Length: 380
Image 1 (tube, rainbow, N blue to C red):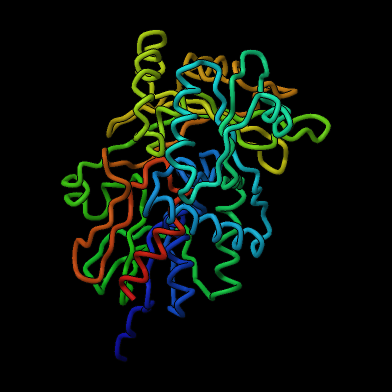
Image 2 (image 1 turned 180 degrees about the vertical axis):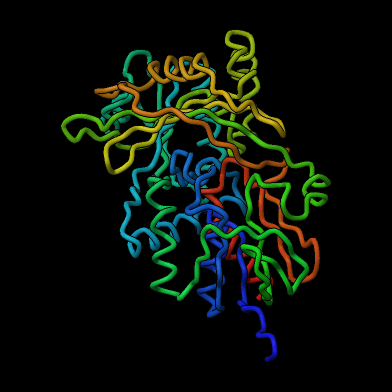
């Protein structure tokens, strides 16, 4: 009897985190047959260990902001079909120091005609939008109307079923892809073939194309986060909140000349914020839980042990700008994502028919859907 041919899929995607799911959606929307391979029973890495923030306000004007806004719309559409909440709550950056206010004023002055949806609010206007913002010493708040919050644990768990039901995508969970030589690859110890393969494997740099990753300059970033119990009496945070430290983190603000003075003060007064890459934000899911974080530690071998002192620093700073009814902490954890310094993503072709998509840094939830549309459109 002749041997049967190995199973074939038009598009194979390695990884069921947000980058892999986004590419599955983009390919399936074009009528392609898609199979997603995930080594775990479900995605368990960075895609479920984050704020769930879709954060266009953090992206600089131009291609990245437009990509973020496209992603935002896809998130809203996907959430409605998959049955999870996409809270179009917007965001507030709060200023309590004159140098923070200067950055907010410069940002609004230089960016109000771009694709952002922004306004500089008085303390009274901030109070109208946010029951959580600390009023004492508040100078102003940068309102942005574009931010959306999802619960990443819920979203990443439910999107696969939407892709199955709506587009006929196939998922092979508990199935690691260990070898690729296009059009052939080995998944779960069995041969497969495909027309095109996307490697969306996050911080697994070792299994496939390790030399490509090594040459890219990619590293890993560990972050620590906390989640509260559900807030009592259906209390809602309103907009996602952050404060002055966050202005130093996102490249949207990098053009502001006033940023240098803020960075210098932080380095002088609180150097541990810089040493541990701490900036503090908060989001709320539909269960009422608050997610608070985070820190940033860089290196290919992150410390597996979390530091209680970093969580205390995060919470202490959080209390300077936010006052929820309950700060009872239910969970702490860390996540690890891939990043290339001074680059927004890695899209490379280690061999014909194969595309690696990785290293979106901390912006995977914000950019993945838009990036996937661009990548798949170029290769269709």
